[in-house]
Image (cartoon, rainbow over all chains, first blue to last red; front, side, top):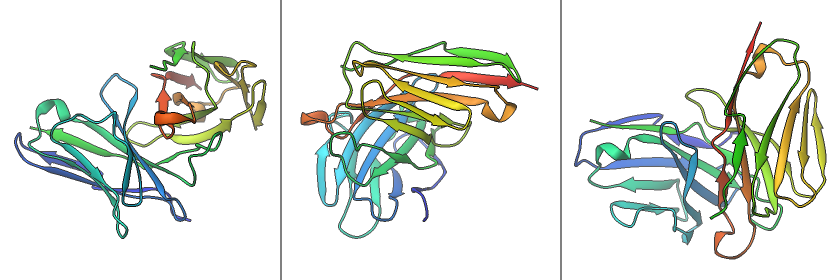
Length: 116
Length: 114
């Protein structure tokens, strides 16, 4: 059973360009979460999605960032007009259910975004 | 905001020693997970605990969830160089608007020398 897959593993963008990060959850998982890890900081929650629905986006910056999880295909985290401060490791996690006590989330290997 | 404080931040020990790392909060969590992260990789799940007072053992690793579900500890017996890594605890609230998110501590960086 394949784990959570993310691509690309490394992404380099110049300021002002767009970054698109992809995440395929584990088989049978319908809940996807995105986290960001800045150097010397812990993982910070960004957004929680189910198929075709954004459940909680309170951790995501209001501007330039968007996320989707379509009926078919991977979840996408999109960053428009990237700035140097967006440089970080972005992790996707998935879970089978988000009920009480069953929030075990399995993480992908991450996408390391570098903005020049 | 639910905050998880992990201690110590860094731990450097010799192979064969025992160690305990701590994860503390003033908030109550419905579940708590421990992960280990290697450089350049994503966190790998070690264990999930959901019941106050619960103790789980995974070979040389023992995890405990506090009775009040506000804190947890990870004890490693006879540490080996392969245990080297960043140990992260993460708590889930499990209700309301924050149903899905995990709150992470900053981690304990463990180095085990041969």
